[in-house]
Image 1 (cartoon, rainbow, N blue to C red):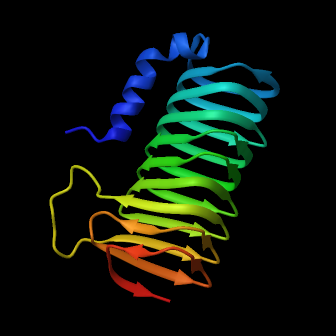
Image 2: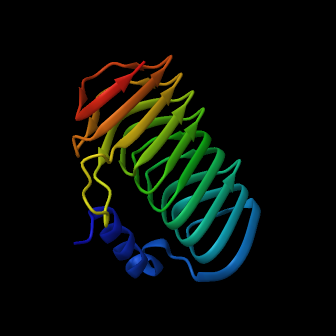
Length: 197
């Protein structure tokens, strides 16, 4: 069974030529110091000091620095630094956020590392390990990981270091391990088997 994040990423690639108004690009492309309406790329895309007023759909690796984007969908790896996302981020793969402001939600199927970032919407993550440092998050929902055999000893680990969660932290699997260092959760905590402060 496909998980909703994967279905969403697949569908977004099928229809993105029309929705973005962008021609597809391929290979390793670097764009800097300009504004564009939308992006559709297959391969590695590096953005530096860019403004993307529409959506960005990437099948491969996305590296962003000092840029402003609206909505981002990545089927692969996303590295976003010193940037603003005015909409949502959807990633089927690893996501690294460093000094990023996200106005919408972040939905990831893969490893997540967040540092010095603010996420105004919910973080919805399917991963065995999530690390969030020096950040403010609206709320966190951790979904079970896919395509892995069930193990009674397997846990999903959330590490919060000097982080503030304004709402709830929910482990849907009921197999959560929460490690908090100088962090606060203002809502409820659900699905945790062990908690360390």
